[in-house]
Structure formats: structure tokens, C-alpha cells
Image (cartoon, rainbow, N blue to C red):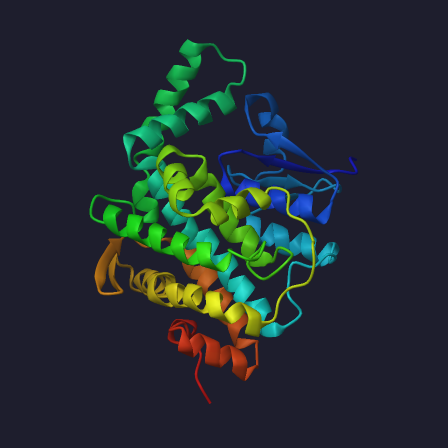
Length: 333
């Protein structure tokens, strides 16, 4: 039995990078294993689903799904905590983590596989990762297979010719808001990373290594780029801030979630309940259409339950003022 955690992952997987970042921050002994044919048999011992990251614990237990992995390990290694002690900030951090996993992934995945230049580059990288010693012909064949498979999966995140200009605008607006918020702080909630940093930074880091998004981020959001790379080796350099110090630049970010992410995930959940093949939701006056995604409904329910567990009128006020309350089923007293 190894004393190390083993993380089976991929450099092109935001959820893998997220988990690795967390293990590095907590200084938890681990080894990174790039999933590939050379370790497939070992990987399958721990993977119930063919996804990364898959973590093998020192007790030879397999863990999957990045958020439960972080929650499980955080309970076992609580310090340094990624959760602010203030219950209001604790919930907001969890909200940003969910936002990163679900909405941030939409922005990244669409741009990675929509335009041919990005899709070709990503397919080539993934082919090289799976065949580190393959010759050019074998890598080219693998890259062609990856390109064909992945460019046909955009509908899973709502990527389509109709939504492409909307998603580009969503990305640009988010980058502009984050650039202001991160102008004078290292992490979303202060001088140390919180749960929300791990969820969102990993998605934007992956976007930054692709041609189109990499150019966009470098051109208009250098502070965001610094944060993404900082989160590869995050450090505890001080305390979390208070809401009062965060509010001026975090409030606009939360209003962004209230305009786009939360009404979208609520509409997705409702579509699943009715069995609809697709749904259309008004996001800030523009119609957005896509097929429903099953996992999001489960994570939205968990987020709402977490919100309901915070009995603090400050949170109610913040969520109401930013347009988030109705989607989280918050009722003012």
C-alpha cells in the first residue's frame, strides 16, 4: 500500500488541474500520473467511470468527480482551510466553485472545440499526451480521431452557431469583471485560495492555453492570467478578507452570476423535470438555447441546500441585491 495519493489526470482537463492544485496547496503527498495506455490497467482498478481526474487513495480507494474529491480530502486534512470562517463568505465561495465547474466549463469547452484552429491545436495536444513517444504518423492519426470525436460534442455544453456570439460575450464580460477584482488581490477572497478559486481558475487556465482564448485573456485580462497560473501552485500568504473589503468588486461578479449562470442552471433543472429535449432561457435580454445537462440539476440542488443552511441576513441581502436570491430560492423575511 502506497503512502501517496495518486492522481490520474490530464494536463488538458480543468478538473484534473483543479484537483492537483488543491493537493499542492495542502502539501498532501501525491504523485501525478498522466492517464494513458501505459497505465490504463492500473487506472481501471480505481475508475468506476472512464473520466479524469481519478484519485487512488493510500488505502487503495478510488475517488472521482473533482468537487467530492476536494470535500472528502478537506474533511481529512482541514488545514489550511479553503473555506472562510464567515458563513456568508463560505457560501459565496461555494457558489463560485459551482459557477466555475459548470459555467466556466461552458466558456472553456466552447472556445476549445468550436473554431477549427483551437480544435486542431487541442486535438494535437491530446494526441501527444496519449502517445508521448508516438511517431508523427501515429500522432496525426490519433489527433484526427480526437478532432472528429470532440468537435461533435459541443451540444453537451450548449455550444452552437446560435450561441457562439453569446458565449464569446459572456467570456469577455467575465474577464473584465475578474480583472478589476483581482487587480489588488492574489485570490478571489484575499491572500489565500478558497473553494471558489479552485473551481473557476482551473477552467480559465485551460482556456488560456488555447489559441483563441489565450489571445483574448492575454490581451484584456493580464491579472486574470496571473491568477490562473498562480493557482497552479497556490500559497497561503495571509487571511481571507471581510465582505466589506470584497464587496466593491465582488458585487458586480455576483450580479453577473445573477444575470447568466443562475437563471441558466435553473432553466436547465426545470427542463430536466419536464423531460424537454432542449430549453430556451432569457439571459439579460438575449435568448439562449441548448439541450439540458443532467449533472447540473444535482449540483444546483446541493447548492440550494447549502444556501438554505446559512441563517444570516447579510447573505440574504447580498443575494437579493445581486439578483441571485430568486434562483437560489432565498426568501427575504
